[in-house]
Amino acid sequence: MDDLVLSQKPQEEDRLGALTDDILLSILGSVDLATAARTSALSTRWRSLPWLLPELNLHVRDFLPVPCPDYPLAAALRIFFYSKIPAQHINQAMASLTRAARSFLRTKHSRTVTKMSLEIYLVGNYSHDIGPLVRDAIDNGTVRELDLTIADDKDFRCKRADMLQKARVVDGFFSTYPNVLPCLTRLHLYNLRFAKGDMLHRTLFDCCKQLQHLSLDHCDAGDGSVWQIDAPSSGLRVLELRYSYLKRLEVLCLPKLELLRWEVWLHNETPLHFGSVPCLKELFLLCGADIDHPGFSLSQLLDGATDIHTLTLNFQGEKLWIQPESRQLRAAFSKLKKLSIQGIYVEFDLLWTINLLEAAPTVEIFGVEAFEHPCSVPFWVRVGVQRVQPSWKTPGFTSCSKWQLRELHVASFSPLVGHHMLFVREVMGRAPKLETVLLKENEEPCRKCEAMGALPTPIGGMFPRGKDEQDAIARQLRDKRIVSSSSAAKIVFKSIASTVVF
Image (cartoon, rainbow, N blue to C red):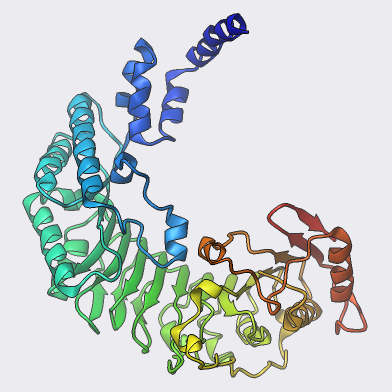
């Protein structure tokens, strides 16, 4: 057996050695830099390959002695990606990253790196080590595009004084190495409070001429501040905000903006105002609302952004933060193609969502998602305050003949929830061009709920798994005695393990 294993190894090495450098570089480009660097010990040929990569990815998380939390889990638990990492681990990781950066950037001076992705902590003196390396690589033409993440070891409970100090450190880094800003194509910042809003604007838009993607986690210019973006020369295409104390974001002019994503705002007023955003095609809004949230007008928020084709609203299983509207939304929804309403508490009726569909006859894909997470029960519910059911009236379906709807998606579907079945029947009976009804199980089990030992309640029930049970449900949904008109749409049950079509 040992002889057989030994005889197989040279054959495996020969097959690997038969691959061209381009293929091997493609393989190395799919792994982190630390792993790519270790491959240089495999053979003489592999020794130089990591230094020939056209893109250089230096991420501090890849150098941590203990892996940091998985990002999807961290996001689900509403914590930041970098929280709760021991200081000594951060120092070790930054020391290793700095050594790797020095090795790669000094070796690659004869080649051009198309793009460098850099993720660092500005702690200790490491900014004085990594900064000159990046500055020189930009000056000598080795790096032309920079994707920069300045990580932080605190979560969203970071104190205001610390946020101000961190903003000064970041501003100091950019002031010391000013050639970094014009090279930025993507920037991700955490836990910063800029003393003046104009400093934020000047740093991010006036100086970052190549910036296309900006992500700000827990960043603002003060509690209740209003951030105005007026950047007619900006090429920014993607803007993401998470957990912000901004009272309002006013996008006065961002001519190239295509996607805006805002997760969690902390004021009850309309969080957004649009001026000139002619390229804005996708808007994603996620937030849970307190019991006393008055709601705001979605049509007023979208005034000035009438070319959106994809809209996602996520309520996190709490009170709806939009006021009842239907026809008022027609102008804003005139070009809408995909509409997703997520995070609807499992006991809430779903028929109210058809008001939005009525206002958007051009929508081709309509999705709703029920929400039931015992791990995320609001404080006011835990102390006995009841959730507020949506107060929207059921629409009269006056214009359903014009609907372009082709796909209906229902996530976290349960036949034990009566209004789930009623909602699907109503849409099937009114959408003349409907082709597919996709009934989905929640594909991302909540690890925090699992850690609590919490299972779906009888309210939510379980997703139908057996083919006989699914067939019976499909028959009920198509029952002409119940559905107001026949529908030829196929019904698809998609669980974690299988997909069955009826």
